[in-house]
Length: 341
Image 1 (spheres, rainbow, N blue to C red):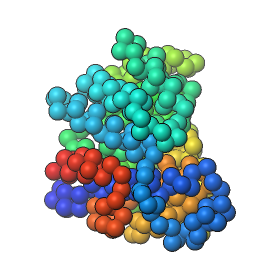
Image 2 (cartoon, helix red, strand yellow):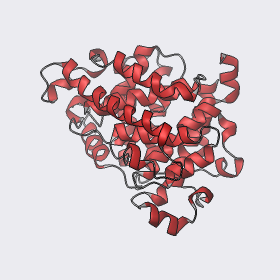
Image 3 (cartoon, rainbow, N blue to C red):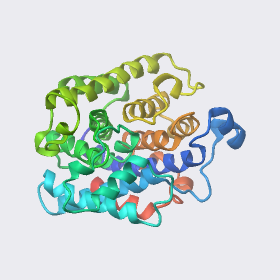
Image 4 (tube, helix red, strand yellow):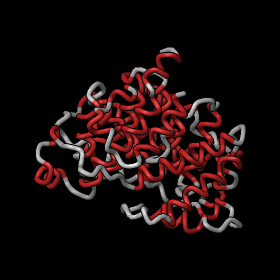
């Protein structure tokens, strides 16, 4: 796909709006099993966006990362130090906000409370035992912002995860999630996406981004940084193998969590979101509905399903009747327009 085509479809706007729509659709169904969701919402293929269309911490933290990334890039070439400070400040502002009342994840709350101290190196705040999906639910902006090298995109994706979730699987899954969004925004055919992600994981399996992560690896029990990061990539490769099989065999009527996991941890969140998207590549609203009607972390699964679909199809994927009433619409459109331009 040419650059002109990519701009015309407005992939960044489509991804950010889709993320928020999925988040709002899945918010009322999180923590429910599928029978309970069906009893509450009716047939899953007919689920409607709630009124009002309120989002969760998934969208709030995506916007926090997006604003921090915008600030960092306004100051010049993206470097670890230039990114860490504004993103850290945005995360702490989110932590302190009265709007932070949408069942935020425990790891994010603990880490952000530690990030408040500017004298504390961020590695001391990172929760190295946590690979929760909070690490990659918010990473989509790094797949959308133009002008980054592959090294910058990967390093920044892992750094933003590590500010809160320091487990190597959280880092690898965040890197893979940003890479998937980037590939779709640039026009990669979805049929080849899983294979490309597996190749990317193999190529990066023992690559530790020292410049971006510093001594984070020393806080775990690994003998070398390569051993540390390989643990994360290996877990991601395992779930991508399950995803590859599920795309060929799973019925769209079956709860996707049964094939690739409930999505509470980062690698399963990536795989189950991708499965929902790949089951309905040309039908984004049905993809969101399938993602929201799952037995796992429904809002997080649906939010990145929407990001993948929006990156692939662009802003016109979403009907105005839904997109025009999403919470934080102005902020989402502002960042989308910046990156689409």
